[in-house]
Length: 251
Length: 112
Image (cartoon, rainbow over all chains, first blue to last red; front, side, top):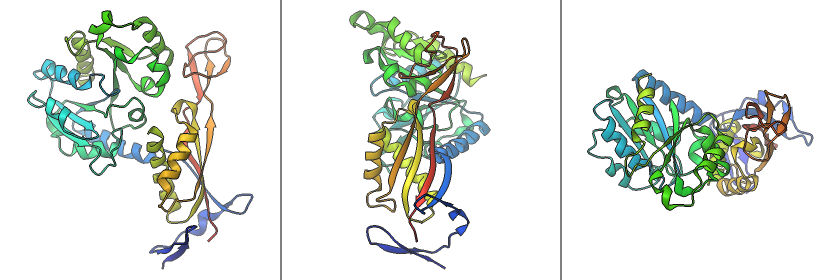
């Protein structure tokens, strides 16, 4: 057994397994062997996401993947959400951050089971949560005792949108301080969201922000998104967000 | 940094299929709506594969434009913005035909 390889850089090693020569059947014009793969780039992530989804469904837990840019107000909104809903639904939070337990600490004492996943610990400092990281965080949550799991993704307007983690729905927090054009610049995330919480709405009188233009831009990339105007600072609109969560948790 | 995550996912799929054999070229197909910048992905690929079994492999990126078919007037539009609307009658009632591709298509192997 074993197969000897010489790499272009001159290193050599062998493997303790043989290869099936059957998949050498395709060749390019230059005679190089070609393997047809035709596999989704994220298929491995999606496989683990399906496992997560199965485990969550088996435990009767409905799951929301909450995404936003850094500083849009996800954690403040979550604090409000936990206070509002803790007597009505059993909530778990999976808190994703590149480093520190600052956000997880902010959620302590509000009646929710909190599991922290730092993406710099063994995950290479990833700028998003993927299905495998979420799987490791799920293992530390009492799923059988939960109705609703809120996954606070790493603050980032690009990467989290590509990685399914096993959620039932994706929600997005967008702060009006980010500017009207964001849906056009970051369409992947805005397209992925079922609901967009338009946060920091209390700052509207103080900004040059054109709310109608933002809503038109959002509708251009995602006409189906539900929009909830809110302020996690004052609490305005938080009830509408909580109603949306309750509808998801008790379909 | 998005491209680095994508490059990592591609390398994972390639390593599984290559199963230890030396890969010289990887063909991927990526739709415009995936918001991947080809140059940034090529750079991320080179950086990521340096020092690994995939070092020296070429990442060939086939970019697929986003196109929609209008349910109202039947026209087909190639999008130059991520706005999924008909270019003829501006209806938003459109079906996405292409633009969300995200696949590892094939690998080429070194002669052994």
